[in-house]
Length: 200
Ligand code: ADP
Ligand code: 5GP
Image (cartoon, rainbow, N blue to C red; front, side, top):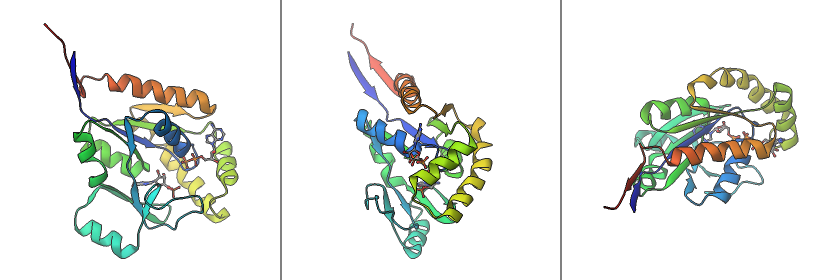
């Protein structure tokens, strides 16, 4: 049996602190068919972040140049900083049959869903707003005012969840991850991207 595959564009979104990064990292470690689309951002690097692995950290001027060159598949201002997905991180890989994973905010996810209707969109929810707050404080990567801003934005972001093909509540991490794997497993067999050629 011969088979060809078109790459899957997996869009993971949800409020800050829901556990997107945690789930994304697990999936990347477990499933070598996925590569991560490294976004550009104008926000400063956190202590645990690696340049060109977590983000391409760039200046406002560099960001403006990318905008002028039409380099973005999508871009958005999120929690006061600018973020964007580069077309160059996505299309060449998908055309080679690789699966590409985006971890982007709901504004960006909406733009990608419109441009690429066959993308697989997954929204990650926390079990409650109070747990979201606990997680953002426990992660301890933002100042209290920044955490407040992210919690306020979470209300609007969660109101958008019905736009997504799949919803996962990340309460128990192992259960949430197995649900994400189930989505991926099913979507790999979707006839929009899987083309088996059976023998005579
Ligand atoms: P996001 O990428 O959505 O902003 P993170 O993956 O950084 O969120 O997770 C936020 C914090 O919550 C991290 O400290 C992470 O370890 C923790 N976390 C993630 N999933 C769970 C879970 N299911 N239960 C408890 N804590 C979690
Ligand atoms: P953080 O600053 O915590 O890394 O990310 C803040 C938010 O920006 C998260 O919701 C994350 O998914 C989103 N984000 C990261 N990269 C991009 C991107 O390229 N485009 C958009 N629209 N959002 C992004």
